[in-house]
Image 1 (cartoon, one colour):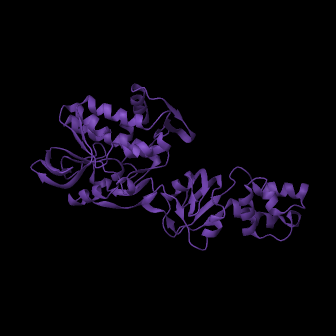
Image 2: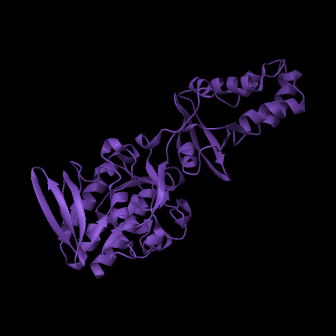
Image 3: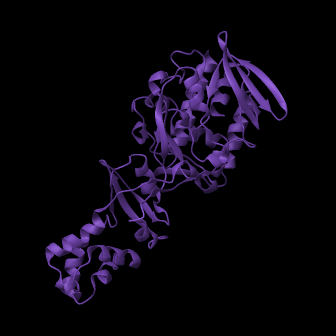
Length: 384
């Protein structure tokens, strides 16, 4: 929709095809129905790609401030949450209505509940076979934009169509996997995590030199929450994740102070002065200290607190595309122009958004990439 609104400014006819019953369904469900539509701090460093420089052009030419200006022109009220995340005061449907209005302003058409049955090269353009209800339509176009998203949230109709089209026209793919997704654990670890299900704490989660600090949620399947979703994009099978359950408090110093003041209490009780009671008991059970707090040496206190400050866990996997917010990997950026998103070797073929090997952090970054890459392609088509 973003691309269509921009492409239509060039005066040509524009058609958006969507197999869903309503446009912008992923927008509608995002942010608890209020759409975390961008982030105040969006910049190229918030994105993963085999080529970390690829996103710079589009992100610098259509920024979060440009999108905010569009939101303001449509009278949509918004607010900022933690870490620069911007949400609608009202409903995510306002963002969809805004994009539809921008399309309408340039006469762009939208066909819903329409499936793509085939794409072929036709002269200097393309022929697209469409199925709309009981009718089949062959549409010819000079420019074809693939904005199909990734494989995440298949219950909403996500498919691998975009990747299949890329391969059909000879574009390489970076292997895909679920990202911004909860982590799961083996039978050996899972019972301990299940016993903590429902607890949420502010935590630091680290893997392979990358660290995030946000909320961590214990679930019946393993670990979730913003910090875990963030780190899942960097985690690979066989790697450990290291969790600091108390990043603001030096538990070692705290326990030493309590040892001098109230040494007869149990270690779990002392830990519960900082951590939730169930979590404090879990840390104590893992450390298995002998005696009360007064019985612990400095070295033993350091060993106990390491179970909270540097809890080392090895995930068995993730919950996969079913619950993933985005797909990591996709169309190799080496095959695309970073300025226009056009395939270097197939004139008139564009790939934008999540289908491309550019994946943002949690917090509105992936929507910003959608707006920026869509705008870039639309601009190129309008100028065509």
